[in-house]
Image (cartoon, rainbow, N blue to C red):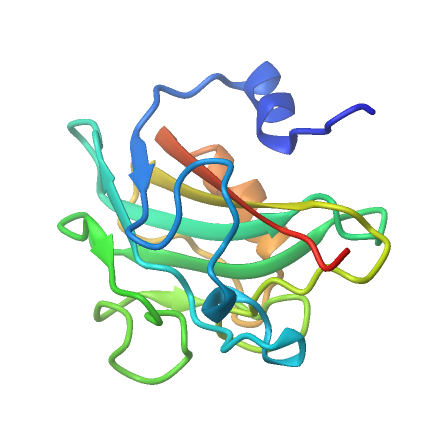
Length: 178
C-alpha cells in the first residue's frame, strides 16, 4: 500500500534543513499514549510533551502542528496548529495544547482544528481505517509574527509558514482503533 507523506511532497517544493523533534510521551513511529487520544476514544485530548533542538541562527519564531494524513476525508485532519511561539521556546509540556490561557508561552496563537476548537484534539482513528499517522511538525521561522487572519485554518498556516521556514523537525506517532 502506498504510504503518503505530505511533508516529503513539500520537500520537492523546498527542502528544509532538519531539526530534531522528540517527545517524552512516545518515540518515532510508535503508538501515541492513550491520554493523547480524543476523549470520545477513551483518551484525554492531552497534547504530548514535545522538545526540539537544532533551530538555525536567524530563527525569530516557531510554528507547530499535528496532522493526520490518513483520516478518511480526502484531505487529512488537522488536530492542532500553533504559531508565533517565541524563539526561546524549545519545549512544550504535556497538555500545553489544552486551550487554557497560560498553557502555551505568551504570544503563541492557536488556530481552530478540524473540530473548530482552538486546542489540541486527540487521536481518533475511526474503526476499520487502519493505522493512522500523526505528524507533529515544528518549523523554525524567519519572522517573529505570521500575518494570518484570526480563525484561519491550519492549512492557511501551512501555506504561510512554508515561505518562512528555515528548518523543520518531524515526529510521527501512530494510533489505530482496529
